[in-house]
Image 1 (cartoon, rainbow, N blue to C red):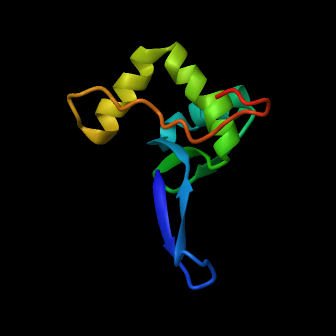
Image 2: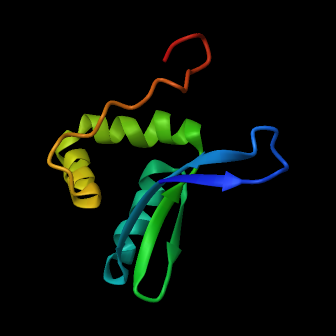
Length: 104
């Protein structure tokens, strides 16, 4: 999920927030809780009819969550197609995050 926040507090007039969000029916709450435990990052939220796992830390998304879905691409492509309803595969992730030591 990408959010654009407009605010005069920023010299550019706003900011962009990136988050990984997975939403499921409330009957799958245990799955959402297990995702948060498995990845050791993000949080789970419960609502009346659904639950969601959300991680908005860029480092955790790139170092923990994204490698998991790249290792198990069938799950990644299924989620991409289900969420975006696209027949094409998702684009490669942008190389905007670099680990310490100069690697990507």
